[in-house]
Length: 378
Image (cartoon, rainbow, N blue to C red; front, side, top):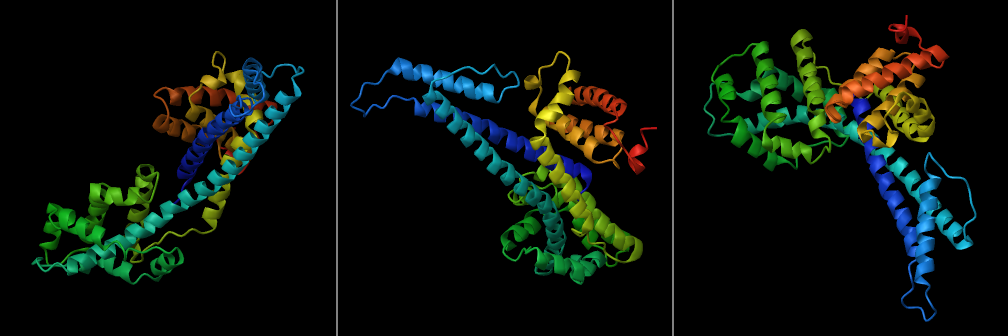
């Protein structure tokens, strides 16, 4: 259920978060230099404020040049300034190293949280049925708890095992469940019509669950707020969750067996894909920019939208490290993400850059595809 599109989006989000942290770390490093050369107002010794201010400006300039692509030629600086710059540089690199690790860990956790929400939504259907059973005012001719798919969910051992293994439960969320049922579901016209019938076909049971999933659980403000507190990227994950839960129910309609998704070997492969996109986009940043810069023509790389900059690097990492993924698949996916998450013109911009880069990499022999990856390279 954690498809490659979701993985690419998670990598982009983590890279964006890291980029913001990197900028903050650099500012802290500049501040460290400023603090080093700030006049000591409590000192009894003479403070040459003009000299200290000159050292501050020089130190901050040298630090900026240290991480600039247009690094100036080395020149002698006072030892005090050199020491201050080295200290600030070490501080900056150490903070970045910690942040790389932090966002790498958080990225995986946030990807897996989508799976946890999938399990939680399945459990929520059972809880809603239980709440309906307790509703003494419900004089309907049929009970929601008699829904054949919900009955199957109750006895599905795989679901039970996964809920226990991942420590997922709604026992402490009865206020939320009661409010959702009382204020939204019980008075819903489609739900009332469903409960007004005595017997239901399997298709009707499937239909009501699809309706509640799309129009209540993934849409209503009460449930939206509940899930948004658990998932920073809830709005981005809704479609993935809708498809996954629907697929689970659809399997029961087709062959009488629920298909509970698992974090199995496929996830291990996708997790490696996620970590590679993230790590190489950062650690090989300079090499990737050397490939991109000649294609930018009148664009300065610093002026490109941050999200576009990140997506271009991710696309290069994918092209160069995954022979089995066709170039067109990589480019098309990155274009769609750029359209959704960046500027109105980002899709066209990213497309133009990546088309040119892919052609050049292929001609130079650096772009090597195999198997399915050769489909668009004939």
